[in-house]
Image (cartoon, rainbow, N blue to C red; front, side, top):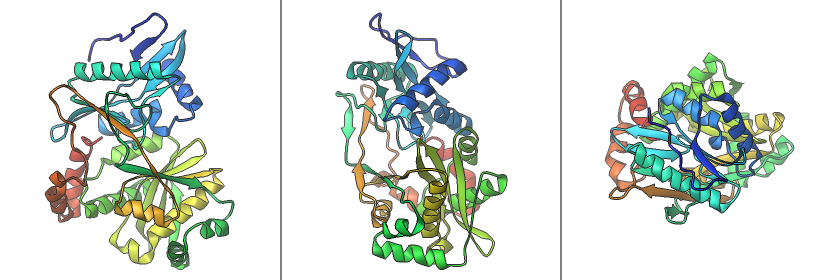
Amino acid sequence: MNAPFDFQSDMSLAIRPADFTDPVAIARIEAFVADCDAGAVFHRPAWLQAVEMGTGQAAVGISAERAGRVVGWLPLTEVHSPLFGRALVSSGFGVGGGILATDQAVAAKLAHAAEELALRHSCATVELRGGALPRQWDARHDSHCGFAAPLQPDDETQLLAIPRKQRAEVRKGLDANLRVRVGTDEVDRAAHYGVYAESVRNLGTPVFPRSLFDAVLDRLDADILTVHHDGEPVASVLSLYHRGAVLPYWGGGTFAARGLRANDRMYFELMRHARLRGCAIFDFGRSKTGSGAYHFKRNWGFEARPLSYATWNAPGHAARDVDPTSARHAARIALWKRLPLALANRLGPFIAKGLG
């Protein structure tokens, strides 16, 4: 374990690593995240702890305090992989994160602390997925977009909010002989993992370890909605709930799902379920700009909102490449799509837990 460090540069501001063994300190950071307008589920220490429990990638994080009050927080996961190298990621396995701070001076000190922490932990890269972006870091504003919209007060109004062509697909899914189940029991977890693993294999992507999904379900406000046909799960999504919003996060369908419109049924049923839970926002998450998922979400009537990311690289090092659309990975993805599902499920978690 690394020795303690202190990046304090003045007597009024203390910058220090988060102590995840101290429940009082973690509760104070959780309260700070809850009070920040930009605070997302991926900023929560509980998210970092679930990721560590489910993947073995360490939760680290850096907090800023002034006069005993938290004024800044940078959630970080220390991701290490023999294939993709070492990086500090904010937030690991999330689509959001980055620096939360009460002012630019605090944000700048947290960014500098992250650089120093990366060097101490032999990490060549720090990745921020949102939040305050350091001026000297490499920033991108065109790689991904987020999609979110208010939930409507009833089913019919929700249907009418969906553009006509996509609405017709949803109605077909609603008329189909499909059964919907929501829960967090073992039967829900097993059904979700089976469907999700097949879905990502079909896309050429290694599946995350099931332990990650279990840890998120156990530590955060989350559940699973699964669509069944003839007793078999064909579409399933694990969703997160945070501050009145539902985020369908890990979802997918089998080959049969498309013809059954099971994915369309799944997302509409999730809108209905979230509304009954008291949610006001449907956060469709992020998608690579111009990708199939990007256009799918736009077809539902969601407006694309560009997301901003920033990367710092240690001197002499290039950014790691974990972009599944990059040319470097094209041959690997094509090969993965042809793997037998059992083999893909056996090998996938060892690779995926290093992506972060």
